[in-house]
Length: 68
Image 1: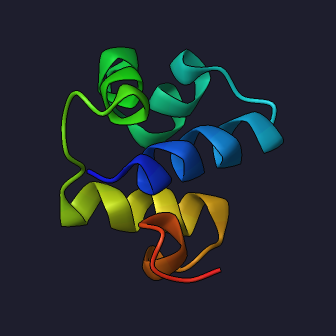
Image 2: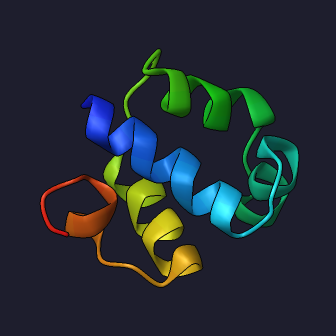
């Protein structure tokens, strides 16, 4: 996962005033999953990228740092 993607996930979460725990709860995931994405310890799969993009109402390209 690129640094840009890691930063986008964290930025979107913080702009929504969500903790990692609350975001994970909203998406049906573990807090560690969100933490690992934000720190670059694991890659996000397509299904979860779609969930995140839909939740934050952004495109997958934006989420993955491919567009502004």
